[in-house]
Length: 223
Image 1 (cartoon, rainbow, N blue to C red):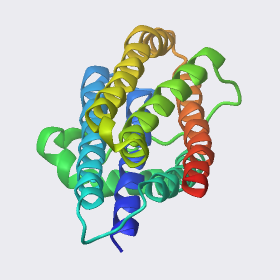
Image 2: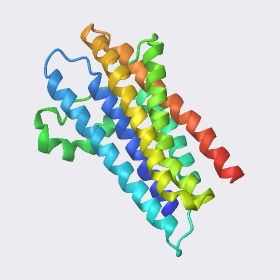
Image 3: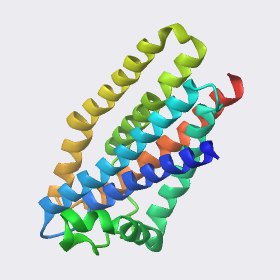
Image 4: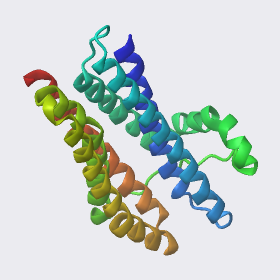
């Protein structure tokens, strides 16, 4: 039950990450700055859920009373994320359901946007550079979350090193976002290519979670 709850929590954080992309790339003629701030808030919620989930996994892993498989949790949550991103891309009802889910939290800071919906049908074209950047950054973040557990379980004498190794991957992902992904995406948004930005970033997220399923699944099977 603990593994299932943590898998669902991580999948929820990935769903919120996908929703933040919809908000950020919304084709609005006004309130663009407010939408950007809202997308940052939604992404912050996603990060908080991820951090809490990883903290709980760490506490349970180091405790002697409950045995859990961190690789299975990360593989399962990434598999759920693949389904979630397919639904975010293809289902207006699902995307609007996320709006309803987070409405109580949004009402506090952004009451005018609490009922705003963001789903639109994606255009067929995408920007490969932006897709690759989205894939790499999210895949690095997923590895950064899991790597300390892998190192701690195989070479426990390097537990402290494993934490900083995860932080280095996190730093690398942030550097790519700040220097490549966001500048490129913002320029495209300014040029009115919001649909292409949305398609590219969502596709990169989807592919990164699909790759993570295979990586974490392989670790689960062979360790």
